[in-house]
Image 1: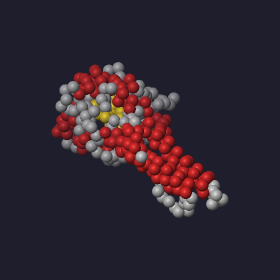
Image 2: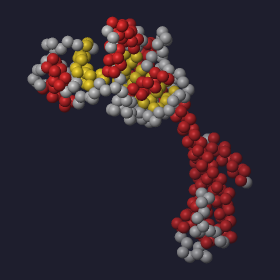
Image 3: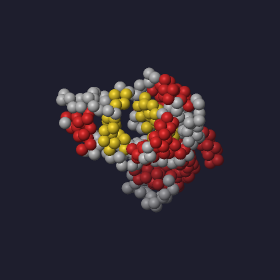
Length: 355
């Protein structure tokens, strides 16, 4: 009898929903059945016994704790305990515990192998996986910014079967970056921004693959802001017409820095400092949302900012960079790029503009 019940439980467990329903039903029947038989047969010898006490006895018995404060003394109560607790209850309880353990193990495997669905908000997506060293460096650098140190990051790629490193704020989702279903599982509608990496510096098809991934990404969430790695500047045309996309040309920047360092030693060290969140004094930016009625030229603004130990180095306006500030006045949506040890807030910026 016991073996037959166990066989049926094993079969039910393979059908998750049916198995859970059967096991929970068996647990409820065993607890309620034992409580009722215990109450009916023990009530005669123990008038103070309540229904609540009977259910307490069933719960303690089925979990094998057995405090000893209540026990079956009549034949009917003992037979009820054997039938509902020993035969049905313990079998159902162990099956339920097994299901719970299997579910937890399956959940852990799905999380580690990235085949599940994520339920995150305001998270960051990192698309593609060129190699572990680069991805870990980018994650480490990104989270070095105090504003993002607690952000959740999701790595999306189909190039690895499981996340090769562990980080409390990093999640892994395995799937093609060219498929909408992948981004739906990555909770794309709730993501705040994406970093799209190249597939590899030696991959001639990297830029076209990245452009396709960005296209799918922005169709899934048009509001998301993407920073995209493009190996060949000539391939920038692939990204034309895509809103909220910033391109970075890593090889071109590296080559330029090599030449500059050979001609003007010290440039490389400075670039290393101002492009890292881990060092004091880094490149930062702020967008000009409002322009005061009083027109103040950027040279005067730069002087006032310098008094606050903030070095204004450039203005980005309509995709063009201005490094000379003479006769240049603020306009709405200007992006001020500066070097400082901490970020400017909107109030401090407005104070500089009003001088």
